[in-house]
Length: 214
Image 1: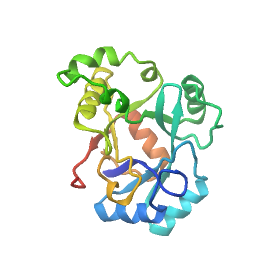
Image 2: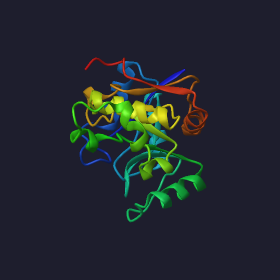
Image 3: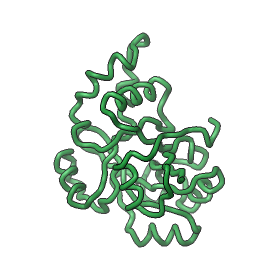
């Protein structure tokens, strides 16, 4: 079993981040996580720097990225470089497939939730919203995001169910106190990026948010 926060940002690679990588890892250990994924905005850590950070703290650190596409933002793993000019979701999917990676929709309904009608039932919207183009290209969607509200999460779960996806969790932490507010609970031990990719493909995981009280 492994509890991993799949979605975090640091001052090292995200302009909006305000915690250092060491602070991220120390907080992850403190709240009971078994690993963290550093997913800077359109920015990739070099694999050797990720490995060095993990060795320093004797803790699992996996490098990914949160990439802006023409359909929305996605978390990618297994692909460690992407030119800034590449934003077409189909092209990114091709590159990820060649690298043997995966792609997850990040906070898929953040903008939609801001314009929602209060009485809308998320389950009644799922079938129509699931037709959005981005869902044709991703492996999973983030159902629990530390910065998302209750209605967004309900809609994400409803769409994930419609698409027969499990749904991942990540804090979207930009600061220390948010680390671990949402995470992904893997049934098996995750030792590296390859394990994480395999277990997501095999569906042996679920989203969680009970480690840190908001």
